[in-house]
Amino acid sequence: MSKICQITGKKAMIGNNVSHSKRRTKRSFDVNLFHKKFYYVEQDCWIRLNISAAGLRTINKMGLDAALKNAVNKGYCTWNDVKVLDF
Image (cartoon, rainbow, N blue to C red):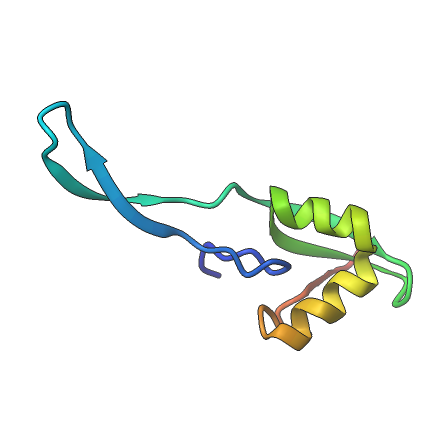
């Protein structure tokens, strides 16, 4: 999976390193992305998401089910991309 948040759709941006002499070279601004396990109450299972810090705040605000449905509707992820963990 590439470095894209499954909840917010954030991905790396391209910008410039600017030196003291104003010389510009390309660089990328990566997303604050990590793997996180959540307990999905509606399906009674554990899932793992690639999520950014902003996505985690979204889940805390809206709830996991609403955030996942919103992400699927906007096309940031599909239900097949959500990894179900077996314990």
